[in-house]
Length: 96
Image (cartoon, rainbow, N blue to C red; front, side, top):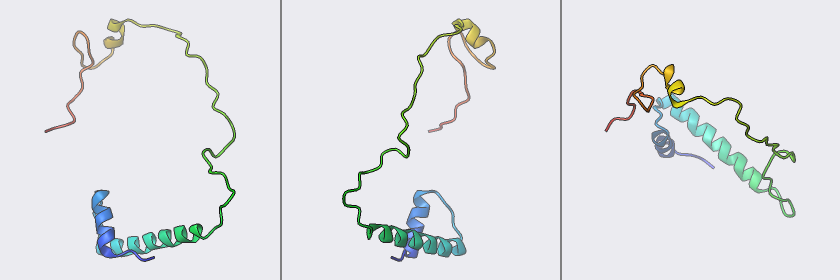
């Protein structure tokens, strides 16, 4: 399957990538190879094969949460560069 330049530009826009013309050509070839490989995989007979959810059969071993040390609200704020009486103060990162 082949990918056209318009598709590469659309994907690049969605991914917020700026590609040069040479990079677009290279990306078209790479994406075409990926789709060709996926088409090849679709040719494989998978009847009777159970879907794989996890790569290993091992189970996750969890431990109980145990409180080892407690600190007060004031102690938590002591080393904060900026804080008021109740909260850590951080710089605004989202603008309207």
